[in-house]
Length: 360
Image 1 (cartoon, rainbow, N blue to C red):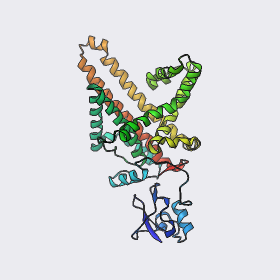
Image 2: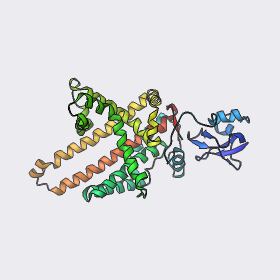
Image 3: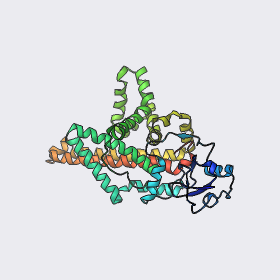
Image 4: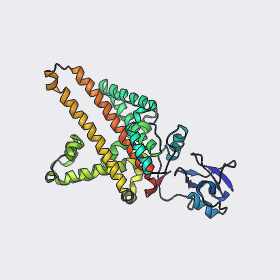
């Protein structure tokens, strides 16, 4: 028998024949490679109540080892779920990884809206805000770089929240431009192209714009969710319905792409099964997403009414007021984006036991 330790700190006693295989930790839910180390603090029986069986079959069943591989497992990203779980524990993040209680979920959702209360998160937020504002109001190349950088950051927020991390990812300027900037932006844009493909295809086949079908979809969405969902039922078209369904599927799509890459989307059957199993929570995630976006759009409408051209002339407003309002609105957009990404990650973190697959 050998002692193996998960990055979260849990130790297990396993037969020597199981070394080198992938196993699922019963404490944190992540997968790790069984590697022998010095005798640990407790055995399988202590950790998961497996009865301390010393036979190979019992140990493998207790740890989740199935014929040397885990089924089903979607391909992990370069930054693995296992590694982020260890980071969360080291930095003092939430320690209840994988327990998924309703109370814990509600607390984490509330914390997601209050994440700026943490000084480290506030500092990261201010750095992002400053970088995006400077990029948008100085020069085009800097603006492009800032946009790519923020796309990568948002995907990392999903992964950190999915691992139980209460902190935002570290804000740093990356050197590998393609892997850490261009590719994450491709992933981010790709999630929207995927969910809107049915709407684009429908407009291409039945519309009058041909290859410019994307323009019709863009016009539908340019007014924001408020305009998109605010029409009367009688005025809803097939294109509207396809866009609605795409938006409803987007949280799951961005979760899959952030955690496992585009290859994660190959198993549409597992994705559908997972949504059915977690349907009430998925609806809550959508409701929170829509609510946050509606708050953002309400703030934009109020700002536009207060600092628009007519208001500016009547109250002696200047261009400077418009710029200040635009900068503040950009901060609100960044805040909402981060909250949304955390909500999507928490959906997996608290209810991954009901998922039809697992990332390792």
